[in-house]
Length: 409
Ligand code: C5P
Image (tube, rainbow, N blue to C red):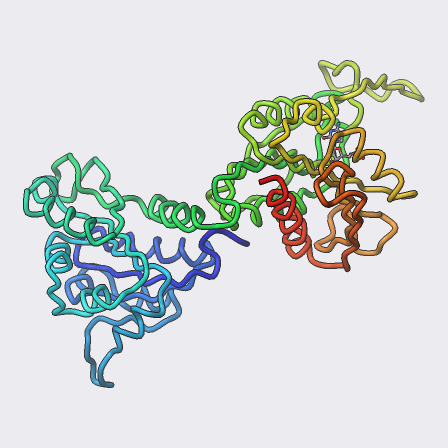
């Protein structure tokens, strides 16, 4: 698993609002996204949710006061440790304290010591939210460079309906993921990826398919997303999913559906990675009802499916990069070279079914990258890689993509 939050160190600061119960799922979502979380809470927050819940989820002790029986809790160290501080929920009282530098609890002390970006998700009743003092404090915090995660509108604990609900945990995680993604090497790039097999129906229950798992394409999607790219993953029938909420997965069934989704996304794409094992042929007609086994032999007429890679190759502009895959059982480099030219790829990733551990369904892959002669400074370049996990292979491929992008800029 990989996301823009992977490896990030986050301080989650909880203050005394009924929305504090949502901090438990927020903590879990951060950890699921690959972050490390340390929790600090005000005394008032402990009335709404137990520190034990948060220490269990975060697997770190929770600090609720500047000093304890063991001694002084080092807020400075914590403030320097973090890549981000998230105040969620932030009450009107705590907001007022932070806006005015009143450090009479651990949350405020850590806040004043933090050098990392700070995000705050207020939570309060509608009239408290609209009060000029609250709005003034929000502006004050923003003027220090802190990031407001806007409140939601809806039912409030008081029974009133209006603005003031804490943003949902998923929205808070997305907010931070977008923030970190914007600072990364593929920020601002739109990468579309086709992955998995396609299923071409014969009748309502049968299809022509292949053994592709989609693992390589999924690893590429997560890697590109973790480097800040906007990723559209066009995925054929596959059981895979991702916890990276920034990856937009469009699920398709047939080659024709994959082609239509890829063509629609390609207009805004900077990069297309064609990792799908697309069926080359489909039945000319699909039987309306399940075919009975009356005849001793049964012939199915097949017609060609669209070649997605070749079609996108025709549409490719000088600013776009297309990357293909070749899975070969014989004459790998020669066949890959031919596909590279024919489909107008910038480079092609060759994996051979003759290499143990490479190809469909394995968690490992062994690749060779062949560059197009036209790619600046890359002409004829062939790079061989060792057998690695598909996650590590995805890093190698995205490194190669970054090098080509740099060459074009
Ligand atoms: O099937 P073939 O070996 O020609 O595949 C080479 C490349 O072309 C792969 O990147 C594959 O995803 C792509 N392709 C495609 N549409 C097809 C067939 C292949 O996008 N119908």
